[in-house]
Image 1 (cartoon, rainbow, N blue to C red):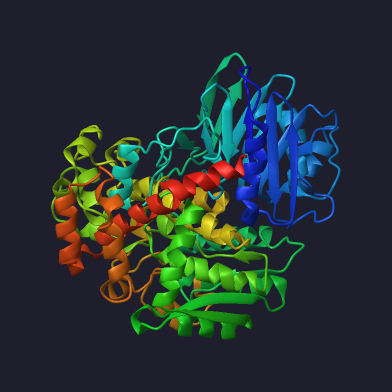
Image 2: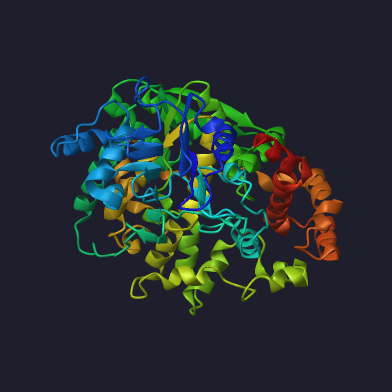
Length: 597
C-alpha cells in the first residue's frame, strides 16, 4: 500500500501513489485500486487471499467519509463483524479489510487495539483531513513514511517505493549506517535515509490538518517474569492451547496454503499442529545445502513423513547466493547483511510454485530464550553494564575496534558519541529489577525480532508474492510466555524448555533431541571461494573508495588481507556498497525518475 496526505499544504503528488504501487507489484500482483483527491491519495496492490471476488481496496465506510487500505491479514475479522453488527454497523463483503472503516467509526483511533493479525493500516478521515497510520503489535508488516518538501506526509509498504516521491531527499543517515555496520540491519525508527522513517511496531501515528502529529504505543512485550510458582504442567497446557488457537486462526484462506519446514523444533511443531487440525496433507518447503554442516533437509523430510505432507526441497549452491544478492537488496531497499535472507528467498520462490499462503515457525527464540547468545550472556563471569555485556555477544558485523580503523574522520564526526553502543537506550527502557536474560529478550523482541527477522520474512516472501503467517507470533501467546521467567525457559543447556515439552506431544524424539540450528548459509566457505572476487572488486571499486565512509587505505588493506575472522565484517561492508550501486548510483536514480514521468 502507498499514499499521501496534504494536511492543509500543497495538493498531493498524485503520480507518486501510482508509481509507488507499481514498484510494489510483487506484493500484490492480483489487483490494484486507488482513492485520489487533492487532499489525500491512498492506493493498494493486492494479493488476493480472503474475499477473492468482493475484497477490493481501498475500502470505505457506508457514508464514504472514511477510506482505508490494509497490508496484511486480520484474523479475527468474523468476530469483529459480529461486534459491529451488534452496534448497528453491519459490514458488507467477505474480506477482512472491510471491517476497518466501520471499526474506526465505532472506536476512533483505538480501533487498532481490537485487531488480531499482521497488518499495516492507513485510515483517512475525509471530514477531519486526518490520516491514521498503524502497525501490528510485533512488526510483521512494514510501514515507511516521510514528510516531503512542501508539507504533508507520504507513506508506503516498502522503502524504495516511498523514495519515489520527488519531495523526499536521499541523503544517507550516518547514525543509521553506524547501526547497520554493528548489527547488519538498520533498526527502526531509522532508515538508511535521513528523511525517511519506519513506523515502529504497535504504534499509532495520527496526522491531522492544523494539529501537531500524535503517536502512541498501544502494546508491548511485557516480560514480567511473574510465573515463578505456576506448576509446569499448567504452563505447558496453556502454551499448547494458545498455540493451537493461533494455528487455527491462521488456516483461513481461499487460496492454496502450505508451510515452511526447516526440520527445526518451531516449524516442525507448527506443521504438526496444522496437519492435525486440517486433517489432510499440505505442501511443505525447505532448502538444503551442498555443505553438510548446514543441511537440515534430512530432518525436514523426517518431519514431513511423520506429518504426511507433500514435501519439496531446493538445494542451494554458491551460484544461487550470487544470484540472490541483488534480489535481497532490491527488496530490502536498504543495506541488510543477514545471509540467511538468501535461503529465505529460495524457500519462498519454491513455495510460490505450489501455494500462496504459508505458515512459518518464526518468532519463538526471542520469547522462549532460544538463542545461543542468551546462554553466553548468562555464563559471562564479568559483571558491569548489561548493555555492554550484551553487545559483546550480539555484535557480529563490524566491531567497534574495526570501525575505528576504517572510519573516515568526517564520517565518524557525524555520529554522536562514537563509538556508540546503540543498545544502551533500549536497555534503559527495560525494568532494571528483572533478571538480565528477561531484559535481553525484551530488547531483542523490540529490535532483533522486528528489524532483522521479520524484515527478512516479509521482504523475501513478498518478493515472490507469498503471504507468510507465524502462529508463534500471536500476541496472546506472547502475552503469556513473557510472564514465564527466563530461568524456566533456559534450563542448564536446554533452550526453550517449555516449548520442547509441548512439542513432545506432537513430534518424534529425533526432532526434539537434535542440536538447534538457525537458518544459515555456508557464508565462510563462499567468501573464501566463489564470492571472494565479487566482494573484492566491489569494495575496491573507485565508487566504493570515494563514498566518504571509510579511509581508502584502511579499506584496501582489510579487503586485501581477507582474514577469515573478518568474514561477517567483509560481508556487511560488501552489502552496504552493493546497495549503493543498486539503489543510489546514477542508473538507479534515473530509473526512479522515469517511474514518475
